[in-house]
Every structure is written in C-alpha cells, then in structure tokens.
Image 1 (spheres, rainbow, N blue to C red):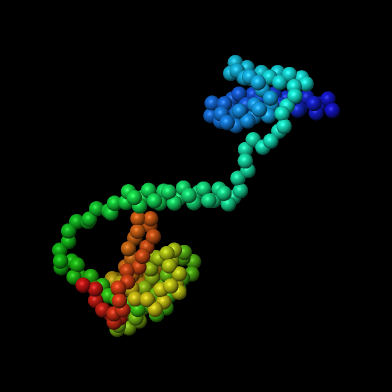
Image 2: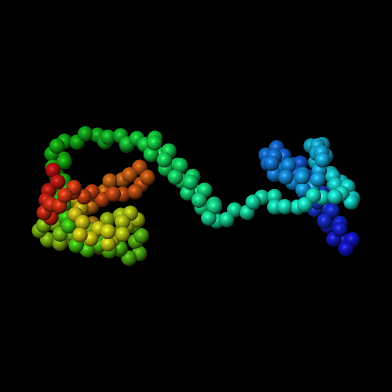
Length: 207
C-alpha cells in the first residue's frame, strides 16, 4: 500500500504540472483540471516541482476532462467541413480559360452522334470503366467509358448519349472501344453524360 501511495502521489504531481503547462493553449481544460485537483493558485515558476500538492491534500470530485466523441459525431463534423468546403468552391467557381481557337474545318472532322444504350456493365477489375453496347443507327458498337464512379450501369440502359463516332478504336482492358462518350465535368470532378433534351433517332448527328 505504501508503494501504491507513492505511485498515486507522483501521478497527481504530474497532473498538477500538466494543469500549469496546459494553461496557455488549453485554458478551459487547465481550469477544469485545477478545479478537480483543488489547486487554489499556480505559477509558471512552480512548473517541474514534485510537491505542488501537499501530503493529505483534499481533492475535489473527479470527472472526465474531455468529452468522449462518438464516431457519428466526428463523421457529422467531417461532413459539415466537406459541405462548407464544397459551398466555398462553388461560390468561388470560375470556368477554365477557353482554349486556343481552331478552324471550322477542324471541328467538322469530328463526327458527333447520338446513340441509344442497349447494354451497360462494369468492366471487370477496372473501378472506373463501364462497357457500353450502343445502337448508332447503322450497327451496334462497343464503347468503353471511364464514368463508373458516377453512374450505375442500370441507370444508363435505354438512355441516349452523345459520342464521337469517328475516333480511332483503342483497346482498354482488352476491350476494343469504338468511340468516346461525351461528358461534362463539374467543378467538384463529377461527370454528367451529355444527352439530347428529347429523343432522336439513333445515329442523329450533333452539329
């Protein structure tokens, strides 16, 4: 018991020193700690002493120094910060500068068309890729698009999308992609697929 008493005494002396050291940057917690220890006065010059609390010193009722924060409270605060950040970004949003002018003939080289999505599925082992089967008015073509983080496949089946029809085919994850689906990128990085305002025939040209 004598050893236990020594340990408790040293622990309380350390806590009393912390109550002094905390004061400049945690004043309210320091005050709360000093109240529990019943420290009527404290001085910086006393910091480091091992006799701040005399033998037999009566302590006040102890209580939790810091409130326990549940995960749900922390998550709510994080979400609040993210929402504030998003609101600030939207308030200060400014579009990217316009790129250099191109000749009209350069634009006409792009064959932009409307197609109807017949099938859509995730590409295995590729978090960002969706594989489309599209009716382009002439045949069915396959297009791979990196929008899997913004759309569920079932959301797009039956929808009409704008795509570049004469883009040279390229292979993605072993799948030959025959075109590029057009999307608008929002200021937060989210993508919105370009769709006609009303239904048109598959293969209709965008001019």
